[in-house]
Length: 63
Image 1 (cartoon, helix red, strand yellow):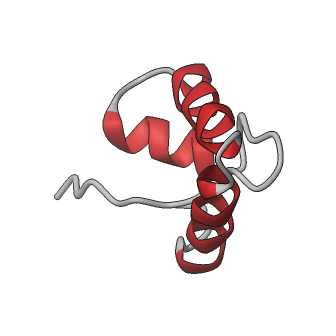
Image 2: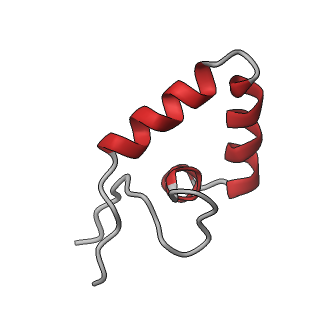
Image 3: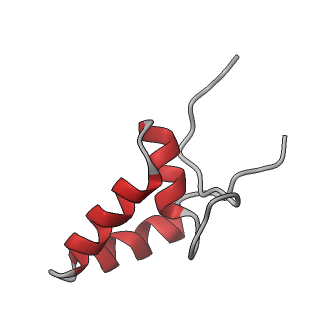
């Protein structure tokens, strides 16, 4: 069964793999997700959301 899971990824990560994992889950380019977080970061919401996701998203396990 090919189950779609939201995880932090090791390949393509810049800081913690949150944006790359979120991009993989949503099926978009990681650059788009990073730009959204930077724009949200201008209002301090992006940093808070990123830190929360970093804490709650499990790391990708090697299969």
